[in-house]
Length: 233
Ligand code: APR
Image 1 (cartoon, rainbow, N blue to C red):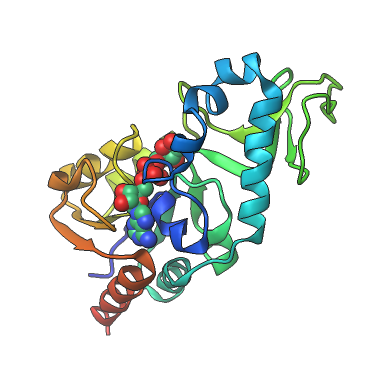
Image 2 (tube, rainbow, N blue to C red; image 1 turned 135 degrees about the horizontal axis):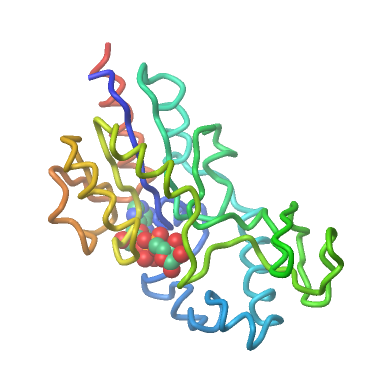
């Protein structure tokens, strides 16, 4: 099948690059209550805490290296005869640094900054501070360009189009706890795509997948990519 491959990735694909996941033991949501650091209300209550949280994640992400799973997906995009698109929930840039180009960051990126007053976007500095003026309107209203709980994920029109034309849908390193991403598998299956879950452990939506593959992404993803590429000779 030289068809279109649509891949959803979550924090688990970056776990072996040293970046924390959210819901595993010791995960980010066990260190910081998400309502304090990943909601508009939390930002309004305490912007300093939110900037501290994202400054730390921005520094960790910049210091991290892509792992074999990221590199395998970049190889798949390069060598697969059909289109390969990554829909990522992650805000790190490890897919791009491994060489993937066709990547949609539905939860935004640590590399982006946004003005909550005028909507301007620019490249985030390493350290963001509450008092920083927006480079466009001057208001002290800058925030990470990351999608918080209760906000609308980015690129959803394009994402629904990709899912409606998928021949193969793979979810890698995601717990299936957050919507709309957790429903992508059902949309792909509805149009007849084959679906596979590649994860360390069964996700909340594992029963929606036609196929599963469990183990650390740095091992399972290169094996899966090699098998996919071998299928086309
Ligand atoms: N290899 C493969 N999978 C792994 C690995 C690994 N080495 N380590 C952990 N995982 C899996 C876990 O089994 C789990 O299913 O990665 C998943 C991580 O789940 P979450 O921590 O919930 O992360 P994610 O699914 O990306 O969260 C989705 O929730 O909080 C929001 O915006 C945030 O984008 C995030 C979204």
